[in-house]
Image 1 (spheres, helix red, strand yellow):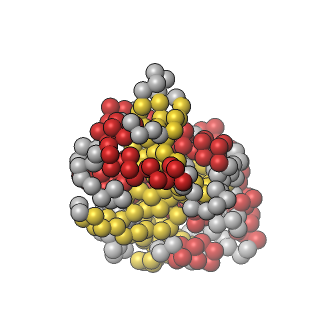
Image 2: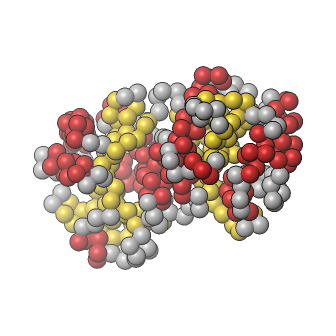
Image 3: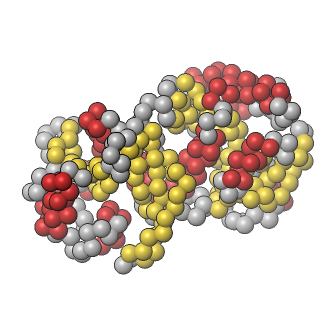
Length: 335
């Protein structure tokens, strides 16, 4: 697979992939302002930007030379450190077959190799779950900005996402059994650090490899790596302790996810990784169908409490467990 610079006759192919008005707005955010979309409108939109080199549209070709995807790159700043990806679209015939990831990988590789980009940014509508799931799987994270957007089809939310492609950003993946020893090692180090800070939250009883092993068996444990080194782990599922059932949650239904055992490797603490990971988790929970996230935070851990409060989590109740009091917190996902 490879990229080729967009030429005007490609407009006929790309415009034919848009079969409904709502699909047009999800794709172009009403920038083209025309329905039905015609090849002339798309060609005209790109013509000036291509001439002035302010926008760089591409088509992606499969191994047989057939166009299967399209996107553009533009650069908000002169130094081209940040590349903006837009108008991402696939031939309907290849959707759901992994081509979206391949297209984004081609875009990332080109932005880095040809322009020296260190960050990628994009926007995705909250009602476009397939696209958001693809971007999350490719390492994009919500950056905390959610923008209002109004189009002829209604009022939508735009989720801004970023990815560090400098090689120093965090890459998330599902953990497996081979990761357990490494995860337990940095979690044990984190216990020592917390103890030195006067935070007696975790000990030799919890959490252990038994807990993380169970998470792996259920396919619920995630690992974030920076430059190939383990940096953070967390578990995301719908299991809640009985004390959660005594709380009056703002979202009282079943559409929630619970964060368990979030731990930043002490080697990477102080870099904002906890906040970035929570934003990633929120996006992950959203595409899994959740409308809220619950968690419990140790009342004697001012660091984690400050982080969750900054992210908008609200205290809904309390639980008194073996190590002391925990605050039961909730955040509604208003994507």
